Image (cartoon, rainbow, N blue to C red; front, side, top):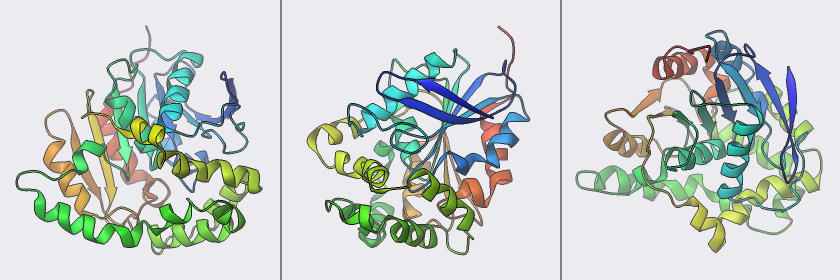
Length: 291
């Protein structure tokens, strides 16, 4: 099923699964991807009682182009909180996010005013966990040394007009490199239906351009998680070096945890949905229905 929610700057379209009276689980996608990344995972979570809502993030069709032109993480966080209110979310609501969605949910997981009880981040850990520290200099140096080779696309996305002109080729290359061996034809078809022209392409690469500006950099800065947080990292992820999982695991202890997903690359939601669902459901616990 689908739904449409009207926010102050644009309409948000979303895919939905699960009972109408179930606790809200908002599932945010990343780049270059769409809400269809949850097409297998969503039903598995819904079968356990969660009301799963996967919005197309601002700029991704069929959601609208935001009237404020804001593509900072702060804007994505505000959209998510607004969706919580628009969809009747309560204190049971949880957040799942992948890639840019993960950056967004990690920010909300660290926000004292966040209405979400738990957070699941995939492919990008809470940013404070990626810093060096006592006993962690080895994996940090190894990850930092290797990461520029993986992150060339970030610089490419800064060049005005470049990514817009070659968006389809760029997306295909990233899916190939980030999830080696995965047949991404269906995923890319969904993506090019969503990002159907240069206006849309400009919108979705603007996430990277906004992050490079002072206001965008400020909105990326947040503290450690304040709510229980699960981090999942694909063993063959070609986007973020696996050593950053070691950094995250050293810090995500107690109510938090970090888990390696075997036989998966960056796009684990479509590569290993059953395995991901098992980790998520074990972390979230049962979906408690009723008031």
